[in-house]
Image 1 (cartoon, rainbow over the protein chains, first blue to last red):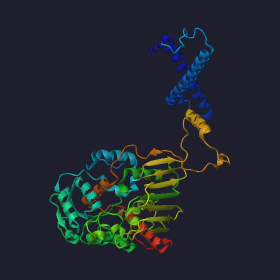
Image 2 (image 1 turned 90 degrees about the horizontal axis):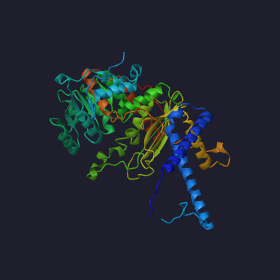
Image 3 (image 1 turned 90 degrees about the vertical axis):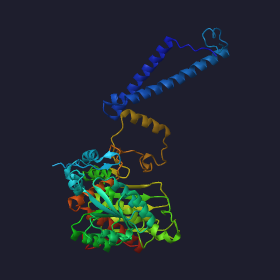
Image 4 (image 1 turned 180 degrees about the vertical axis):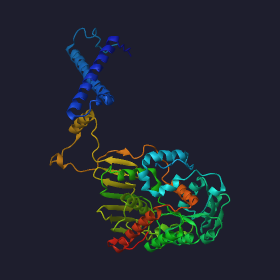
Length: 93
Length: 429
């Protein structure tokens, strides 16, 4: 077992990504209101849905990022890239 | 002038009737609506005092299944004294007497009617006895509460109506939905046009059991399971359908001009004489139909009365209203639904317009926001007691009783004769 250290920088980056997700979800809500000609108050009354959409986007992004990291790791291991361990990508503890 | 609906003090379960009626006044809304339901007027009476002059002495005839429900309600109705109980089935009588201290027991209702000081009777006996008991009670100068359905034949319905007209006594029928706040709210929405003009009423009552009660010995079979034998009852029509036909007539403000239908015993072939499934259509003068069916071999759909119009549907038993054109959901919800449908829906080979008209799975809106425990029985008994106290017959009650009672007997005749049966000409209420 190894300790997982989540750095301040990491948290800040994740929060930034989630904030972007909220902005995207808000944009989707604005688009829906314009497209379906509904009321602008829905920006507030459906904020819980906006948050849910943002969370779904964040999870989707996390999955994609995870797949990307795994892919990179596999490629590096196959290529025997030196310095992979220093980059913290090794599985060794 | 708004009626003061909050001036009595009957307990309904754990709820105080004063509060209950206050809330009910809000539900019902306007005095003009109450004017259309005159049977509510006794509930506007002054509070019941502890004075013996305010006490109403009731005799209960029939202490079986429904009789026991009334007994329990009467015991909690202020100002009511259960003075006597009558049943010709000894175990029921003794069980009833054990619940009411000081009540006198009778096995013959005529002896009970001779009892001095008895203000009124409550008849909860098999259908074929209703008319005889009502007529004898009116002759004895008693006020009468009779369980539904009114009587076994149309002629008996007429005889009860005639006897009541000449008696100036209180008459009440056991159609408790007339006093149910949920049904009142549904009536208000029907009358104010929320669902548009009523174009059809569909009602059904489905169960999945043999409708039998346990019998201690075979010689008691017909006495205990009287609902299954044609000599005592018209089965599903008089024992169940009468409730929904009363509501249908009340909501439409009319009685049917004719009816047709079919019935049979297609599952419970156990010696019973009444149909185990009935299917009828009642036709009204304005072109509206009431479609009714009842069965006891499947309970999936349970029971319901659906009042339909071009703008909505009311399901009164469930206490919900469904708009035909509900407001669209929020834009973002529409967008998500659209994406979801795009991914998961299958398009019929003939194009989107060939999607089957399946029932939309919508939850609708509640008719009444609060949970109301009384199905109307407590209030109908309170109204009966108040009417006796005031010495005034309950307006509109006999009309409701006769219309529903005659309707179900028309239906029974239509099924037996397999032809369309018209409303009896010259029937006087």
